[in-house]
Length: 140
Image (cartoon, rainbow, N blue to C red; front, side):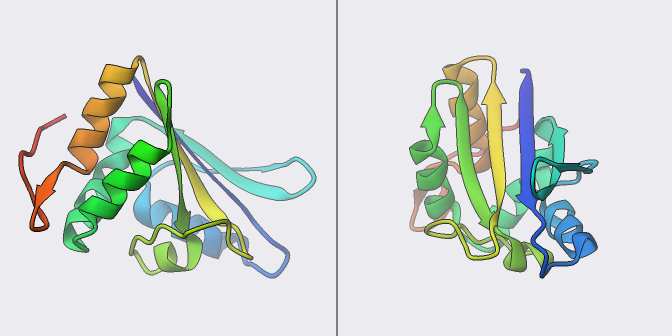
């Protein structure tokens, strides 16, 4: 299953680049590059392996239902997009902000070969639950 995970976050003048880098890599273990398209941005790509920490954290913090709703709502074809709070990620936790934050968010896009593969990735990351417990866990 070919999966591309793209992660990016702007680095605002009031932020320390290393802190933004830490926030991203606490959740997604990817190599990050600094690029500048008018504003500095940390950018990295990974595969399915780069989602394993997020997979664990969603269970640890018991936010599978919220994560599933956000992943499904972010779907467009064989991609899904979502945002994570930078400050929360800096301390190794996960929070899905309601909208764009004043200091920006971590932007994540997951791309699969087709919609079926994407749904399988979503089912793996954030399965359906009953009373907060996964109905069925799958391995990828």
